[in-house]
Image 1 (tube, rainbow, N blue to C red):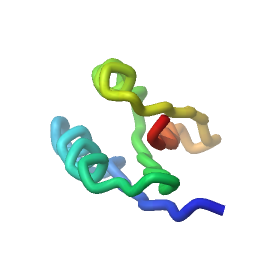
Image 2: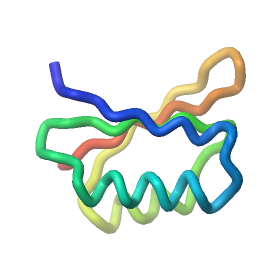
Image 3: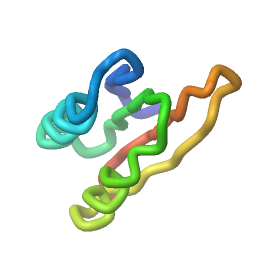
Image 4: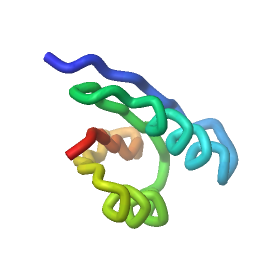
Length: 73
């Protein structure tokens, strides 16, 4: 199973979750996954991920948390 880093952006104000995510992706090793937790869909991030060769999966938890799992293609 791949290693995983977590960024919990649920208590942070924009654009801090996006900035933390982009910084983490700069050092994300091959085969490792980044888990981002937010209370909203990060649509601007999705475009950045697509343009830079990342894949992502999203999920929604009962408490309203949006889970975004990001890895390299």
